[in-house]
Image (tube, rainbow, N blue to C red; front, side, top):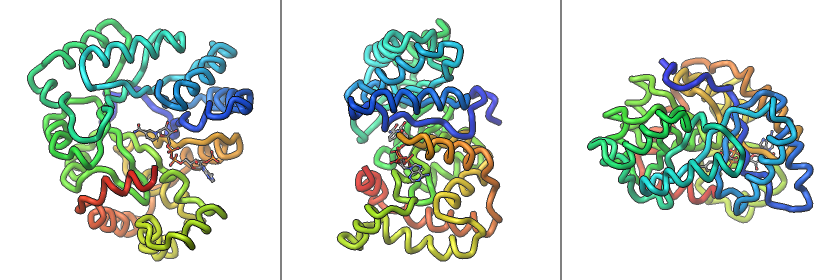
Length: 307
Ligand SMILES: NC(=O)c1ccc[n+]([C@@H]2O[C@H](COP(=O)([O-])OP(=O)(O)OC[C@H]3O[C@@H](n4cnc5c(N)ncnc54)[C@H](OP(=O)(O)O)[C@@H]3O)[C@@H](O)[C@H]2O)c1
């Protein structure tokens, strides 16, 4: 099923939290090094922290070249020129021989011209094929947001890419019902971004305070709808429920969660690696909620609310 993607670690370390605070640079390098010691895949983008995340990763990679991780990077799919330039910039900045998985991402979330381009084997298709032939990128996965479902549906129907990557957690599924159903029926590889829903699935004083000041926030309404499912499960908390929900889907090949904390990194790595599938009736209850939430245009708005 998933042999067209290289074998991924169940947990991919998302590096977006690293590099924001110069005073924390050594701590951030330690977190990246720890992800490497754990043998994890690493996800990143040249845009994170205005480029500073790459500086953290470069230091970590240079300190332990033998432990250099397998990587997944966002690259622009606005044009063939930008796409090739992003690959080159990423490889040069980090001193890497290749990108194992490139995530085709756009600047805005309105449409994806790359779908029509791939269907007609246009310039972006040619560039991706060349990058593969040159051994600079192994695989290309297509990023999906609900707002360009029409293009994304064509991509999935024609199975244009090696895998599909989108926000997917207990709280949020950023693809339409029709697309999700196709991905599931065909067991196409899915890479789940933000399985902690940007920390909305953890209990923190900050979140409790936010619930008090903003009780009508759609995330809290969804969390209320999920509470009976959590109560009916043997999970300790919503994060465990989220990770076990994702583990209930054999086509979800990795969960990409971010942290700037060594303790959370260890916790995420072991929780994702050991997550057991949920009972089928619980999976179905969550899927039913997702079907309701993802039949609305508000789906994309929800992603923005969580940013
Ligand atoms: N369009 C895109 O391609 C896109 C967009 C967004 C993100 N991403 C990628 O996906 C990764 C994950 O996204 P994300 O960081 O926004 O969302 P996430 O992984 O769902 O949530 C991360 C947040 O959860 C907190 N957290 C993690 N484990 C925790 C634990 N055990 N207990 C309490 N809090 C915990 C982290 O805080 P601490 O730092 O305190 O642990 C962090 O604030 C990013 O790093 C990035 O690589 C990609």
